[in-house]
Length: 175
Image: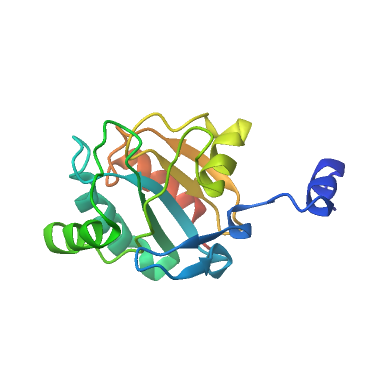
């Protein structure tokens, strides 16, 4: 039974989960995040010229380790912090695929902070239980298979660390 607030938000058309958003792929195709229903997600704002950029390698390793169990990494390049993602979508895609051999989904560059933030990021940061605003590149939001955000991890959280892997394993879909 939904709570009164949840029912109100649903009737008002407000997003109830990550699955309620549509985003643009790095190749310019509009997709609904509802296609990820039933999967655990790690949503990450990325940048190609950041001290944390080597985390692309760990993100790919994490993706490979858990994708068969219903896990996806969703990367959203952003130039919001230090101008560290100046490239075009095509340049970002090429960089990720050539330097880090990424195979997880890449999405079009977005703003993740301020009034111009993408609707998905406004939603993620507006959830009081998620730990607040994105404060640098490679912040991570862990999303359960039902589309609810369960953790907001800092840029310092290495993708293959025990801390991150343990949290991912908790939210993986049941076998």
